[in-house]
Image (cartoon, rainbow, N blue to C red; front, side, top):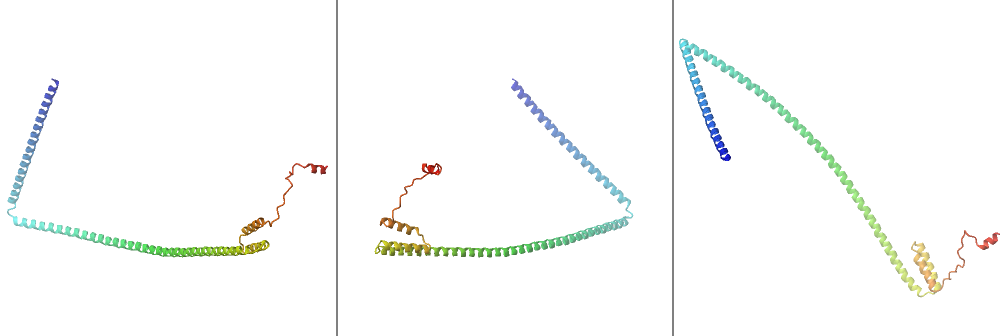
Amino acid sequence: MRKKEKEKIEEELDKATLHVIKQTTLEITNVKNKLMQERHNAEAEKRNRIQQHLASIMRAEENNEEERLKNDLAKAEQRYKEKQKLESDRRARMAKEKNDNFAEYERNIEEKEEAEKDIRKREMMKRLRMNEHDKVEMKKRIEMNREKKRLQRKDLDMQVEEIKFYTREARMADEEAVQRSALLWKMNDQEVLKYGDKVLRDCENKERPTLPVVKALDNFKKTNRLKAPRPKNLSQWKSDVMPTPFSVQLYK
């Protein structure tokens, strides 16, 4: 029941709202029509007054119509001349302002072009200086690279020469070793020792390693029993801190 009553109330409110809207719209339309009618009546009344005023003027000036027309024409011509003069002055003023503005615009353009030309000139000089500097730096780098390559080439040549020298020395040493081996087979022990001493002196004179020759001679002497046996050291190690009985007896 409450729901139905609520729906009924809402329906009545909607109807009342629609009625108010219709009434308001109708009143607005009536007011608008009334205003339009009043405006129309006012305009009609104004036209009537103007027509009556013109009719009265025409009736009042029927006798001197020609003079009035002349005066009106003279006034109209005067107003036209004044208007033309004002227009001419305005155009002259605008032309002068335009010329002044154009002259200033041209000056600004010239100054801007001169400034841009000066900037381009400075940039060109800067690029030329940079190019000269780059050329000098490039020349320095080329010279440094050439010097570096020359030194590297020199070091490489020195290394090659050292390798050739050591290879030649090794080959000569090998050849001498072969020759010595062939000679050793034909020599007796004393001749071998004598020849070994000679080879040792040659190595010392030529600044070659002498240790291999010394070891070879020592091994040859040991193998062929040409070296005296090393004497045995019968003395034992004695402490320097604690005195021996013999030294104590002598001290007493």
